[in-house]
Structures are given as C-alpha cells and as structure tokens.
Image 1 (cartoon, rainbow, N blue to C red):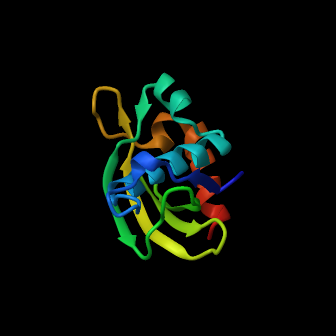
Image 2: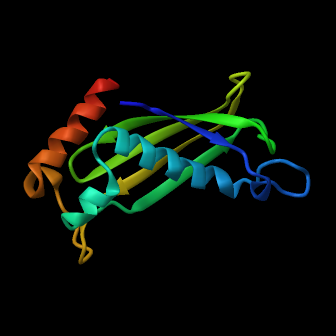
Length: 140
C-alpha cells in the first residue's frame, strides 16, 4: 500500500507570481486521497457501485512554503481516524527534491447511501469496514 503520491506542478496551477495558487492544494489532497484508497483496494468506484459515497465534510490546509511551476511534490497521506461512520485523512506536501514542507492539511468524510442517509460501514458493509480498520491500525 502506497501512501505517497507524486504531483508535478503544472503551469495552469500557478498565479501571476509563478507560485501555486492556494486552491490547488485542496485538489492535490483529493488526487492523493483517491490514489491512496486505490492502492488500498478501497477505490471510490467500487464503493459507489455498492451505493456508498463518502463526501468531504471539512477540509483544512496550512501553507508553509510556495511550490512553483515545474517542481514536483510528494503528498503523504495517512488515514488518521476511522469509526465506521466518519474518517479523517491527513496530508503533508513536501518538495520532491529538498523535502521542504510546502503544506499540511486534513480532510474529514462521512459515509452515506446514495439517497443521502448517513450509514455505519460496520452494519452496511463489513468488508469495507474491515479494510478501513486495517488501514487506520497500520498507522497507530
């Protein structure tokens, strides 16, 4: 299971000063989260095929130093908390070459049925509950 995603900064992600616009870090978090879950056999397509969605309920980003066009960043992902109903993920964005921290953040999510009803994975899908539980326990 891979918990680091590599992203090369694109020109369109930068502002007039040549640095990455702050909104792109949130997009990178999503890219890294999807990659992390795919590597853990928990991809969104499979969850959604079974009628389970996991929307973002909160997101936070602390900017430490700017990333620039042409640079690459590592985005480390960690499943921080999971209780069967909600989960949270933390992110650390570092320069691929120097390791300097560019940003740190987190996102919170819940599990819903397609109709918008909050669910417990333990009751609705023991298979996915067990898979998420293994991931959070790996990082404790």
